[in-house]
Image 1 (cartoon, rainbow, N blue to C red):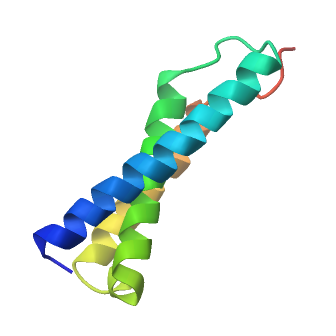
Image 2 (tube, rainbow, N blue to C red):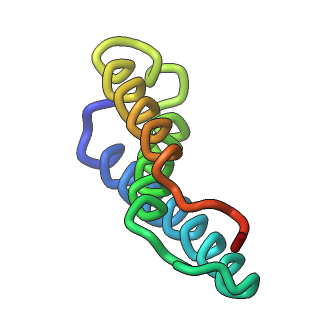
Amino acid sequence: MGTLTSWIEVAFQTILWGGGMLLWTTHKRKTANIKPALSYADVLFWGLGGIEFGLVTTNGWQAFHRPLILLVLLVFLGAMITSVLRPAKSSQ
């Protein structure tokens, strides 16, 4: 739970999943001619989502015990707040 190996795995999964979802979202918005194709809120949202994904998949049920539950809840709350800031899905 607190080893360097597990935190490297969290970082790898964050980059892989969060970056992949960001690229996918940007591609969808670009093909639909929605401006802007990439926003800071999208980067923040998928970055926080990637951290959440990495923490939960790396640590399993241990992510829901103290002290990681505090980090998991804060990241989840941050992602929900940034979801409000994300641009609209349509161009109208």
